[in-house]
Amino acid sequence: MSWIDGRERWVYAALAYALLAISAITAAWQGTSAGVGAGPGSAWAAALLSGVPWPVAALVAAGWLAPVPWLYPRRDTHRTLVVAHYLLLMALAAALAATSLPFVLFVSAGYPLAIAMLPGRLVLAGVTLTALVNVTTQAGPGAGTTLLTVIGGVAVPLVVAGWYVSAEHDRRRRLVERLRAAMEENAELNARLLDQARKAGVLDERHRVAGEIHDTLAQDLVALIGQLSAADRAEHEDSRRRHLDRAAELARRGLSETRRSVRALRPGPLEDAELPDAIGHMARSWAEAAGVELRFEVTGTPVALAAEVEAALFRVAQEALANVAKHAGATRTALTLSYTDESVLLDVRDDGTGFDPQRPADGFGLDGMRQRARGVGGTLDVESEPGQGATVAAAVPAIPDDERLD
Image (cartoon, rainbow, N blue to C red; front, side):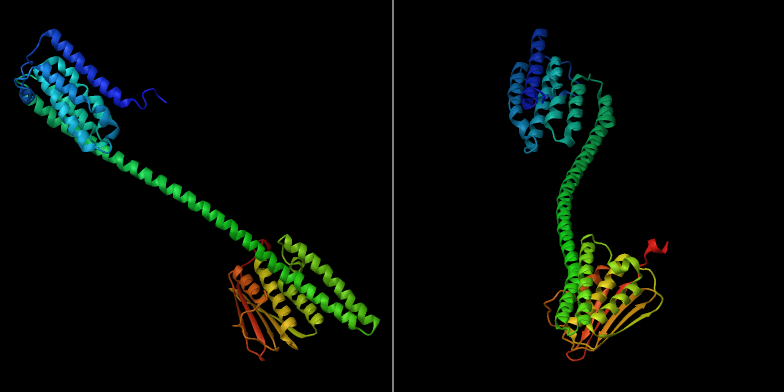
């Protein structure tokens, strides 16, 4: 920090007093009590102190400088007062210079005071005014035309240019301040958005894990319990062994799917088979375990779809069949996978007890299927009535798998 910081008001006042003192000492030493023959440019200044000795005028000027330390820190809040004080100070300095030439040095105090005290748009005007006072108080009687040329050709354009430049500077400063405020606001907004995105990511991951557990482990556990119950009721050893083997297979598959879900990979059947084959194999396995007649049909020309689209369709078909086994009490089920140019349709129909789709459900199944379909830009509709069976219809965009197409 500079030594002058916080002391500017005293520095500017001391500088003005020093110039006034030097001017007064020089005037006293030269013994001048009359001016330099005030010309047309300085006649008004000489008239201002007509009949007043310059020592008295110098004391008045010294008294007028006294408020400078008080005005300096208030130059932004009391602009009118500061401008009026400066103008009267220049008038006193001009009158002194018109009556006694050494006070031209005191007029020069107007330069630093204009820069330090005046508002930004008036700084150049104050500097120009000081220069004009210096010129006019020293001009001879025949310098009228020259003075008008200086005022009209130099001073006025300088003042106008200074006003414009200062106004542009103020405009840009305000713009910078607004931009800085906007950047700070954007930074806060970005921080909030990042926090919300992080929370949304956590919720999405929780939902994904819950859906995967529901679609794999929970269903396999239900089937496993069913096989164990069937083995317990079996009358023959071969039948009991068959149910136990099926239960062991379900347990191994559930463990594999759980590990796969944690790693967020594709469903196991889709890693080694195309979507129609994977759904067909899953459907036949389900029909054998559930003891329900099932007809599986594929229409259109199958194409390789994006991994997330195929995973969503597979899980929807898996969940729909699981719901049939758990709730419908159906004897026949039909599953249709249809390929069109723009979308892929999946329909699962049963002849079970049906239900009211408008009633809130306690389970995760229907909501999970809807969220899976929406997650890939698709839709899922459920049509059912009590005693009339049910139909689950999913439609997703046919987004191709670029990697497999290549």
